[in-house]
Image 1 (cartoon, rainbow, N blue to C red):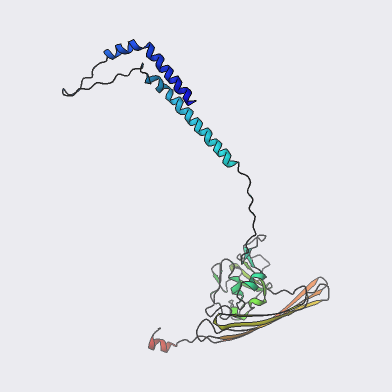
Image 2: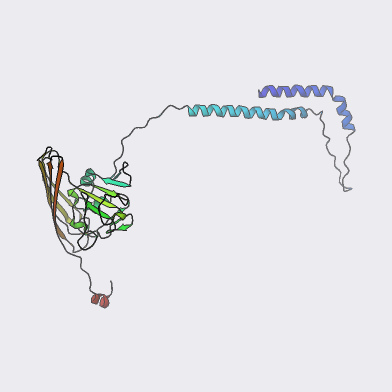
Length: 324
């Protein structure tokens, strides 16, 4: 199309040149001279001549540019059609497992740490705060190592220990002197089945003294469908040792049947801090009985923990020698 327009321009130029030769000469003779403002300057203004061979080509120039733009737009549209007509791509892959998972079917923000994470990822000598650390917005740490020092700085959504509930199988508990918890005195990791963290004030049926801060819900190890016996042991940093055993009958399947589970373990660390070893013994007994459609669960735990606090200075020593 561009070549056709150029040919039309040349033909128009030749016709104009043949018919306007004489007027062109007359107009060139009668061109006026420009009188400058200063006497020593002379200049001539070129006369605009419509009969010039360039004039018809100039009139056709917008149409040429429009044709080029339309052609370029057609090319771009073809390219877009090619790009948009890609074949369908299907990507498949297994979902990565994470330490805690959100419970999407609940009406409040809740996270669960399942049994696999507790027994394969969490420290076997840790306490329930070690497991709850896998969930968002919960923080727990122990200076002398997990499970061997009371985690006194636990917090859930910024609420410190004593401002949120801690329950075991739905029953809230706390220290006898206040609403806080000595985490080393309750339920080692090996005795937990799963943990659910509720970051909301909870619902009306929820029990507890501080539901406004949320709830840390612990669930004890469940009785398996078949009888089993297991022995476990671990060794870690700071000469930390753990030895334990679990014995269990089968879970009751009919009325008037009872299932029993027992876990016994002992552990010893030298402690992350100097001169602060400890010894810890734990026992858990659990029974589940069926009486018709009624399920009766009994749970008993025992913890004995002997430890050495790291040495500290007296006020007299502080006044005599200073803090360092």
